[in-house]
Every structure is written in C-alpha cells, then in structure tokens.
Image (cartoon, rainbow, N blue to C red; front, top):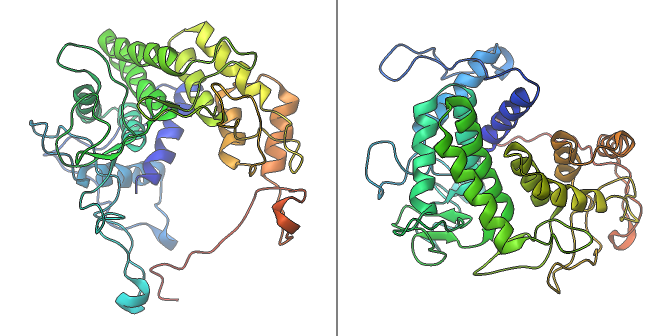
Length: 358
C-alpha cells in the first residue's frame, strides 16, 4: 500500500512547517540516469536519506494509474500492489496474499484511494517532482468539478472504471463515503502545490473544498464547534477529532481563521474525557443526532495524540506533553476485564516475519 508514501508526505509537511522549504531534490527526470534503488543497503536499511526517498520515488513511478481520463500519466494511483509482499515460503494455502487488490473477487476492481493520492501529491510536491504532482492533482480536478464548474466533494475511493464528479455509487466507486478528512487532505495537497509553484488557481481549488465542507458538515453553531465526519449523500453525525485536525490544518494554511478556530475548539474539547486514559484526546463524539455532543467509550487512538501535537491544534503545552508521554509508554501485557480497565500507554513492539526465511 501507500503507507510509506503517507510517512514521507508527513515528513514533507513537517519539513515545510519547520521552515525548511522543499524536501531534498528527487532523482533526475524520466529518461536520464537514476540511482539503483532496487535493493536496500546494509542490514536491509537504505544507506542515506536520498536513497531512502528514491525508493519511494521509484515505487510511485511504478504504480498503475486510472486510464479512463485520457492523457499520459493522468489518473489516480492504485492504492495496493503491484509490489505487495508475499506471505513467505509456506505455500499458497497458508501464505498467499490477495493480489493485486483486497476484495478483488467480490469487487473486481482495484482501489484508488483519495487520501493516499493526496499524500502522494504532497510528497511529490515537496520532492520537487512537480509535473508528477500536477498529474495527480489534475486527476482530482476531473473528479471534483462537474460540467457546469460546480465542485462536488470526493468519494473516499474510486476504481479503474469511469467515474465523474458527484458520483458516489456504481462500478467506478470503491467507497462512496464523503469523508471530511479525506477532502481536507486533498485541499492540503492543492495548497502545498500552490505554495511551491506560485500558481494561485490551485489554492482556489483548496478554498472551494473548504467552502464545501463548511456548507455540508460545519457544526460552528454548536458549543463544541468543529465539523461532522461525513457529508451527503451518506451523512453521519459524529465528529472525529482526527478529521477536525485535518480541517484545522487546511483552514490555517488558507488563513481561514474562523474555520480554523472552530476545528481547534472541537479538538481542545476532546481532551480528558476517557476514564481509561484521561491524559488523551478521545476519538470523537457519538452519531445519534446532528452534531452529536455525546462522547462514547472508545479506544485511545495513537494517531489522534500525534496528529494533534503535529498540527498544533491545541496550544496547551501541558496537554501535549501528557498526551505524548502517555502514547509512548508501553502498557506491557496487562489485560483489562471487559476492555474497560485503565490503559497505561500505547507503545507496542512487534516483529513481523512475513516474507522472512526465518
């Protein structure tokens, strides 16, 4: 999957936020010589930063693209495969993994996820591979704007079959959910590209996305503020802490102070509501009513703690310190009756032997 791209895109965002400008320049353009990135370095780890990033570059170049949009290189990238790990030398019955796509037998199309492609576009932009990033953004434009120029928020995932703006079901749609966080990340991808190239029209797209989110899922008139997690045609009422961190980041990047404050207010209001893990931000609210304000029992999520820190949605240093300190503690092997005992940390270490001869 594009997990490695997600990590690299995150690094790119942090690099930019720290004022360092672009990530180190990528390898030469197509048609010129490139470093050999087919094998990792000593002990299975790439030897330096450029070699590590070049592995991601090469992976993205190989990813299959949607073909129905026309034009070379235009189309979202396939989320899984074709270079997925196999399951090791234990035979097809025990170790054969689904290839090229999960659920292929039920839905004979591969997934082209919006979130993963947004992260890939950010990564390519920060690497200075601007035409490759532009091709991903052009694919988003195809799916964002209808024939009359109206913006339609994106579904969560598409297939390689034809789809157009406003489609949320059918053979071209792998997942028709209109998730707030996914669309915010697409907006961030357009914002990064506009900042890097100076092409203001790309920032206009990001503003259109934010305006649509404000129209469809804003809870600004509620004391908690923020944005609901999913819009029409399959809306949900719950508010996700992680999604509001995404909207906060987009709003701040676009200098939309009212939207940023609404999302940040919600994130701050999610602190300290877990009896199991009081020094954490909870994952969000219930789903029973419009802009539901109830807070159900839920697992303490590591991503919420770290994304909140990185986005600076809550300025409280004490909360940040407590949240990260909690997340980095190892809870050991303790088990809690009914899953309701006190949790003491999220740090876990696991050794994955898939594909290993040992």
